[in-house]
Amino acid sequence: MKTLVLVTQKGGSGKSSLAASLAVAAEEAGERVFMLDLDRQGTLANWINRRTAETPGFDRVNTEGELNTALATLADQKFTLTIIDTPGTDNPLVTAAIRAADLCLVPTRPTPADLEATQPTLEAIQSTRRRFAFVLNQTPVRSSRLNEAAAGLRMFGVLAEPTISQRNDHQDAIGAGQGVTEYNPHGKAADELRSLWGWLNGKLKG
Ligand SMILES: Nc1ncnc2c1ncn2[C@@H]1O[C@H](COP(=O)(O)OP(=O)(O)OP(=O)(O)O)[C@@H](O)[C@H]1O
Ligand SMILES: [Mg+2]
Image 1 (cartoon, rainbow, N blue to C red):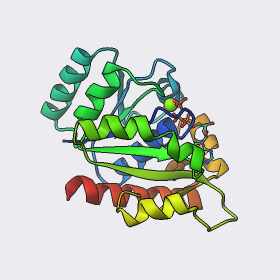
Image 2: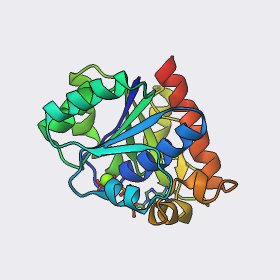
Image 3: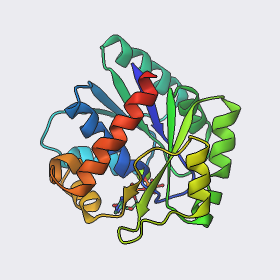
Image 4: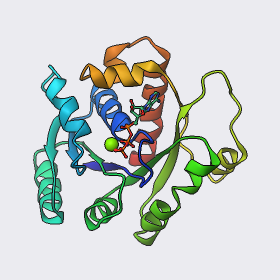
């Protein structure tokens, strides 16, 4: 079982939205997916409640002990992928999730201030020697220009491809209890999301 952790202290960068849509896209690609929500805000719990589909599996986790028990149980149950959504704060539970990750995905909006704000999260990831990648999220559709910082990330090989554009499908899908690939399967948001899953899958299996 592989474990993908969506993490950054910067609020509103897209952790929960991407966790939900990636879970659905990974299932569509044949994975058996379970989601763990470490955020008391409950974005994913509300999303799951709106879903009519029975998968992905979902549970909330409040302590490090619960997290470790859940991951061991899920591996026994032959889930192939666990996706963990974390709160936009730093706490020991988030550090435990980072430690359990095969890959940490750090969503960030493509502004210098947002990129700078990822620094404490990167330090936490690097202190546990976990693998990580940024994904630029909510990039403007009408501008293909990436700022210098993003180009630098790409050169270091830590920028997931493709970047995820700002599109209403992401907001509407969450409201409908779906992933973007379910909500509008032939839309551009769905295409980007499937490509992102393909890129992440390569990193997770590589
Ligand atoms: N690619 C996108 N296009 C349009 N809207 C987006 C996109 N990604 C996220 N959003 C919107 O941005 C807002 C924040 O997203 P989300 O809740 O996923 O962020 P988060 O990192 O989980 O936030 P928090 O730190 O509060 O948990 C939501 O309203 C969501 O619908
Ligand atoms: Mg969230």
